[in-house]
Image: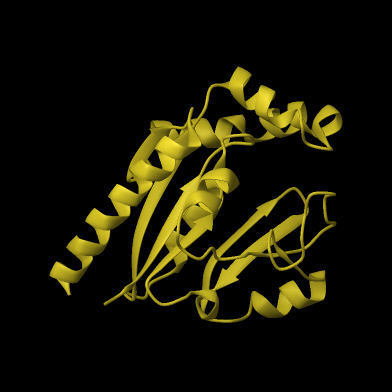
Length: 186
């Protein structure tokens, strides 16, 4: 059976981490350059590496994802995947990178967009340590990319995430269907 990669995509405050943590599947933890936020935990939120280490990773032929936000680069490799189902949080550029660059046929991919209205995202993000300095800028910087992602239908499913428990249940059902169809196709 192929490994399954469930890619969650959503703007700042859409609940990607909250939903991912409610799913009973392992998360792929990105390699990331740049500083840690107060809420980051090494090896849990990201694997923090230097620019030089990222340069070396980018030369590998087993990258499954790569993206850049500002000066910060993120990536993941196929060796980080667990058997079975994996959850990975990515932005639209990372999904595009995957679609353009990953040519192997060893992964069953399901892209799930999470949508949350701006006012609700703002309320959710108020508890973050960097809210006052970063939220408005992040919303501004990411808006066009996420609008394009939704308008171009660059996802398999789009879920309005107003309740993370319900969203996690919906995603579990999607995964069950995707894995069943994947097994039937193999």
